[in-house]
Amino acid sequence: MSGNMNLTLKVWRQKNAEQKGELVTYPVANISPDMSFLEMFDVLNEQLITEGKEPVAFDHDCREGICGMCSMHINGRAHGPNNGVTTCQLHMRSFNDGDTIVVEPWRAAAFPVVKDLVVDRSSFDRIIAKGGYISVNTGNAQDANNLPVPKVDADKAFEAAACIGCGACVATCKNASAMLFVSAKVSQLALLPQGKVEATERVQNMVRQMDLEGFGNCTNTGACEVECPKGKIILFSENFFSEMRRNFFLK
Amino acid sequence: MSNSELFTSSIAKKYVMALTGLFLISFLVIHCTINSLIFVNDGGETFNEAAHFMSHNIVIRILEVGLFFGLVLHMVQSLILTLKNRKARPVAYAVAPSNESSKWYARSMGILGSLLLLFLVVHMSNFWVPTKQAVFADLEHNSFEAMKTVFAEWYFVAIYLVGVGSLSYHLMHGFQSAFQSLGLNHKKYTPVIKTVGFWFSIIVPAIFAAMPLAIYLGVIE
Image 1 (cartoon, rainbow over the protein chains, first blue to last red):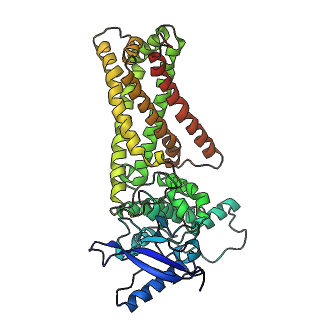
Image 2: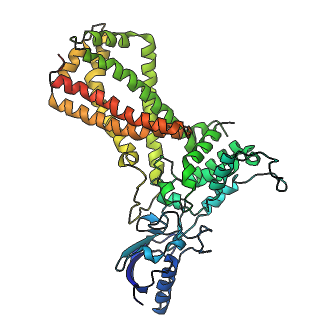
Image 3: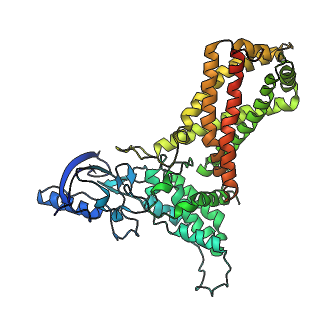
């Protein structure tokens, strides 16, 4: 088919967490511009299996841009060159025929490589387990206007809740800091009346776990905002950081 | 939260960085104001009077001790934070992230801070040590003459220009980042803080830079 591309991939191959990995070069031919980046990787893996080689392990699940499983660092950018999309929603039309594409896993001490491009992001789960919830049953949905919530706060909480926990913020931060993730998870609850009650303890517990997991510190460079696939979080990220930092010392 | 976490938590450490940073910024305002008195151009009379007051006033003396501790805390804490940040990414990317969201100086605070520390060693040995010696020996120290002696040498002028240049870039990120680290973010006031911070980090270092230049070029006598 015309318009199809031939590409050179440099992919991080690593057998397991213990062994050292390296970039391995693979040529792929006849790639349709309509393919998603992950479909292009499916083609590569078919090719490797045919050649009797080990296919590349990579994380993916919904392939609709909402689950947060895919996690590739493409040409120096988390989720690739486009803004506001996950790797599965990145399409090959964003590349040109003859391009060389370097694909690496998320790099962070708190995200150890499991195999190839798969990293272990259970550190995020452990942070959530320390307080990313409301610890009592808040009952059924209230009647409208029964619990007055300012429109601005409701909007901000909603944007915070858009975080899918993919870890692109950690991957792109020069300090591998998890501030955007944690502050979004804090703010989606702290901004609403049901979540406000436990706000301070929640922040303290989640931050304690965040530090234990070995994430770095936020230096306010805003790199996380650029790579977040859920674009609207960035509108309020500084707000979320503040929400978190203010709540930290309240008790 | 245990009390010890007031010092060990990552959020608390950034609070310390911000508070000490803002304290050091307040010192800059005083330092810059007093030293600007050389521009009165009266042979340093006004300036020496102010310098005498600063080196003999008990409140200022106590604040000086506080300033020293603030500076040490700022340096030690930044070292601890930087080491932890380095450890957070043991394997580097083959293709480094593009960093389009921030300027180079925002990502080089450690290097700029180290340059400032080197500058401070030179600066303190030029002025602070001789002043102290004079005060302890109960002698009158002519700070203005000291400035004229130091800034007669081109290499001292060069070192001071590099020093205030580093200060400018360090402040360019540090000023507004301090407020952000304290959780002070506001739709209306944050842009004001950023603008004030930008002009502060240009104007104050520019005034400092004008002092060695003016003396070296003989504008002030």
